[in-house]
Length: 346
Ligand code: NAD
Image: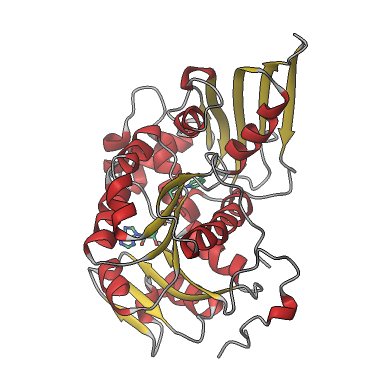
């Protein structure tokens, strides 16, 4: 049983506090990010983690799921569906969960492999008649563009969909939007990320999707690589992936937000798959011209101690909270991390 209580009006220190009960949250995908999301949610009073799904099953408990039990079952047996008595094994875990579980908002911590997978999951939500808030940490421009095409359907379905709400796109895209305000014209947005993880198996989809950006690779090739082939590639590079000029949705998001044309946005970085220490400090540099004609650069740098998981899951739930307040005001459809401010989840 969870000891989380509904939040009384006296806890609402700001007028924009809209929830009388904790927001019931589900996490789809229970790999590296999904498990981190469970840990991030555990101490929160405003959100209650009630549902999780992976490829082989799902778990639901209206009183709140236990992260330790779910992570232990997933790591030992490969699915949260094995958690007794609240787990169910299923090859259609997402659809069954959508249909059975009362959930206010989902974080989609799913691989986008193939590149159309997330859009197909969203179609399942629409077709099931589900209403609520969805948040993703999608990365590719072409993946976010597929969601743009669903804008009207999402709106008609009563779904508030927050896309590109991880770290990059996400936190850094939002920071670029803020930094841009000092300028009359934006010349360049340059995002450089450093990621350090102890072993690639903890984030298989993230690493496969990064490999897809290497010269000579694409999403389909990276998706079809066996684990042994990924390991052989990482052996050749000493566990390091150097990524340049990536197809990252920060560009379309900043263009849609009216900051600058997408050609002025670049994303690259270094991923070390054998060391949790970041190989470089993640930062976004925003260069522009002020109204006085001065050219300058704002730089926003993330603390080196913050992990990829912290910088993805924190913003994802901040945007989920923002999405819930939009949804309560009847604002449905697609929003990006560059368009809406995340709220802070207590
Ligand atoms: P992972 O490989 O560790 O885990 C994926 C999970 O999804 C697994 O639990 C798997 O069982 C589940 N899954 C796969 N197919 C499924 C299906 N059909 N139904 C239900 N569950 C299914 O993944 P990860 O490394 O945590 O990455 C998740 C996503 O987050 C990736 O797409 C990655 O690119 C993205 N990501 C975004 C950012 C960002 O800053 N925007 C950063 C890191 C990762």
